[in-house]
Length: 154
Image 1: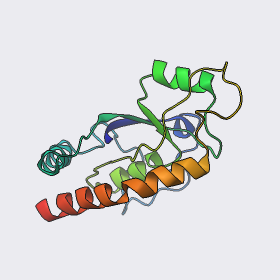
Image 2: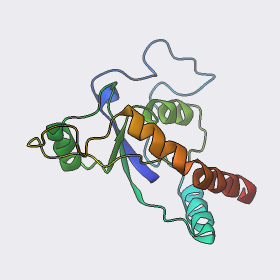
Image 3: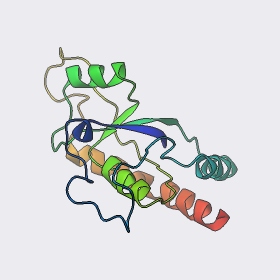
């Protein structure tokens, strides 16, 4: 998924990677995150993906602290607030990169579909860490080709 924007729930609760003393040599005390994911880099990623025949979904990445997977109620909440995907990283790194005026391209490998039914019994259909790792491993060749193509196009 090509990341258009993010929602960082930990940062909204006061857990920002920029807390503490600010080094002005690295960036401003209160950096803007409007347009954090560079429009030109996203367009480049779209062109490369299309050239490779890769379907590149786009959306809003929602960061939760983890390390557990989300409950069905939490997934429904995240959808309501505008999240398209959820993970346990990315947003702090983007915040720090933007603090230092770096351009950012965010791509998230979606490894499992969210379960929104709390009526499920047993483990059928529920992704665990093992299944997520298997899905990620299977996607490595396509993701590697995409990233190499984007870097070559830069």
